[in-house]
Length: 439
Length: 96
Image (cartoon, rainbow over all chains, first blue to last red; front, top):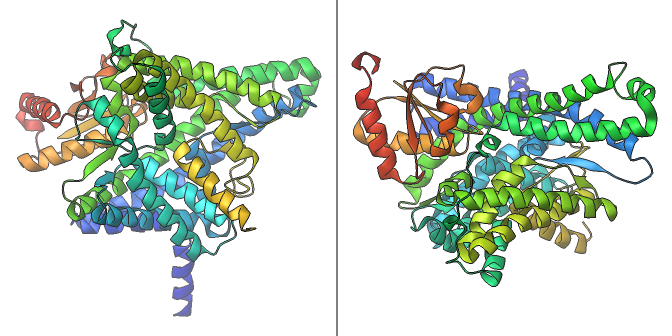
């Protein structure tokens, strides 16, 4: 009998099992059939395991690329890392050092319940439905409080409160601009980009005129292949890895490279396949995310709509792209320029440098430009797109340098950092307060 | 009947479209499996109807399924009329 109890307790500490149980409860509440409940639960559990496989693969490929940078820039103090929210949370939750993975799973559940309750009792009638962002923020806040050395119980309590408040207030903050963008009050913005998008909107208002919209210009379409993750991540990682490898080869020479870094393999072949291997890892990880949230989001939506009738759904950032395709392209261009500029400045002042991210340039600076265009027209769009990645890169670097979310490497996520400002800015504030109290 | 919703990531926009379409089909009493896909998944899988944002048109030229392109992702009226129209054109044998 005692053995059974030990088995159950050991089982319940595994993050994949907790995620599966959350999906199971959701499926039962939706009165799904027995076979739907069973397959949905198992798929969620497998999603969590696939995520672990993906993070292991991508970390295995980042490490040699990091080594190349180190070999190439020895003595300059250059330190690079990859900024990728899903990577951080996936790696930390899979490694599950001292139950932090379990804390993330519980925060996902209780944070959402607090969100639903807050939306019910406050005037902020928004229902946050962006699945991967629900998971990323639950992860970020759980990791934050866990890093203060709190127990599992208090980590989950505090992280869930912050998470619930975040999901309720951020869509409300963005709604005035969302009304300008979509021309209606039907949908809200539910993505971790909000704070930097709002920066774009505020600056846009200061420097531009909204009637001078970027959407009145004629811009070529055809940058759409950036939405294909496999292609855009491969391209950017090939460039990054090749730069690192060439600098390393110049510094230490091909024989030393092939002896110390590539383990005897041809340096160029090795480099190309580290970049592609990284991309493959990201794709596996995203497949895990897909399976993880596929069952949980409909359940959360079903419960939320029962509790808060008429709530506006807060949705993923691409919902605003069709309203402003020109601004989206302006964002991609200005965001890419901003990333390069910020990287140079960060390298010069000796801060850790986040490697370029096409995801941030397209999805984040794109949205920032659309927010900027809504209040400040063309100028606002350029400013919004530029500022997102420029200010964003400093925030990302700050959080990494000062270990705002604790020692992520020790938690299983080496050379990885958070991207979204809605996790980083509250993170820095809470971390700062904790520092004041000597935590 | 299988309806696939498509986006670059396979869990953001596609997930949202899936939720909207689930609601529409439920209200109409139509039974279908609605699955969110990314661009990688759609090439190796079968669906009766593929629903995607307008920007994905160029990726979908080789698709053998009925393709529904949505201009305004949050316009439920547009989504509803286009989906119901696509379902009507399906051969009856394919409907569950």
